[in-house]
Image (cartoon, helix red, strand yellow):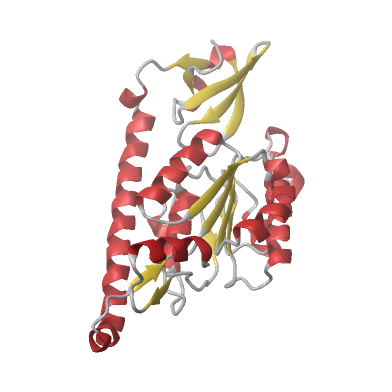
Length: 297
């Protein structure tokens, strides 16, 4: 057993695929490859996986991911059609095509691998995004500096979390029962000091089993995890993309966004929130458009 090995836990029936981050004596520190879960386990309880694509856990996750991505693209196309219908008359009168300015995302992630996957998905969906890999405990301090620099419309605060083993049967409404929920709450407070209006800055916070109620109370628009379950690494990204492409004249459809995530309603919840996408006329020239999207939020 060594750092970098892919493993599953025998005692949990191999339900989650992990990567070994560190080996300490007879225990291993584990990070989920698909779920935002940080765990540790005795080495005898671990089984090395040589072909991760052949495992039941990976296959089930891939099906859910593909369904979620398909739904995301369908919703994006529907939003575009809706936008075209609303401004077609104005565009026709001026004989000019319209353009879209999706909301800009600042994504803070406690896991470098998840951040890389997240940035790839933002790019594929043409969402302007700035990503930073940082330990959860550093996120609040980073936001003080990054928010006025990046000027985002949407902030994602995520990484790893979980209910501490010593508190598994204890008080789930105490922040002390969680690995990183307090750090996420601190970061949300900073975001809300920067922009108090929840429609002015959309905040998406949390990871696996995070303290959902505390994150909402701190000022999040969307948070995990109402059912204290594992959430998929891309669930916060899905919500950010939905926020980025929903018009500022509309509220984000809560049912669509929650049920569209891989984890579902036990994994993510939120409150009514206005979208961050703007449309304009006429469409700028190519060089001017690139400059506009970089400088305008």
